[in-house]
Image (cartoon, rainbow, N blue to C red):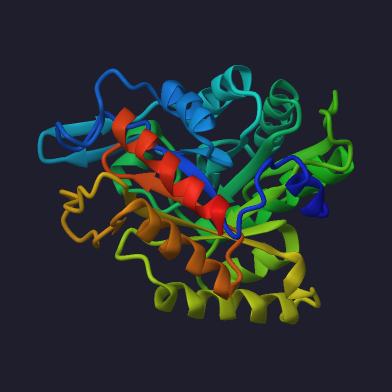
Length: 317
């Protein structure tokens, strides 16, 4: 695994907690959720201008909602477009659903995007927990998600770290596979694993440079603190110093004080004045969170721009 400090050197901010924008690429869950003319790429470019540290793209193919099928743009294509149209922000996949793509191809895609971006990609990976229709309609198996991911991460890690892999598993094969050409980071680009539960936590401790957790409920330190304890325990179990595993979380933030998410079962986003939001974000550093990925409600030009004063307040601390 790589040393994360090498990536942190690229950041221009010295914030107590870094802030990324999570870009939603779906069609919108209600008219006020997505600004019709704000594309995913434009949202990412605006985020860079406003001062975000990173921009990430969620990975889904389809949901079903009351009005019918709800579709998404493909994640890695959008991240590649952002790689070509931004200059400073780190880019991340949030997170790639392992069953959607062949793992050796994932390594090839990641290395290519890292080349396009000049070494700014963080490859976020997860076992996936999408709805059944997402898998069924695209012909993707949804069984043995953990076991499939455990094989996939071995292949991806070997290819990104060593440039080669020879793997023959139950679900995936990568025989005499070579990753060429290599991107701008010969030692490999950083891997983040979205994980909850002891088995996934152990895989994150073994293979990842960053652990990623999320909640679409009301984001609090009390929610994440037990997860951090589990991450630390998983690191110790596999013989790793917990301090070497970076931690990030995904939460909902409403910088324009639109706190009604409009999605049943979702909690109240972080909201308030710019200073209040900055204070709430900074508090996550108290439990070892290095970066907060903000899924803005609503995803609009006004919401992205409203995060500018929040980031300035963080810089002032």
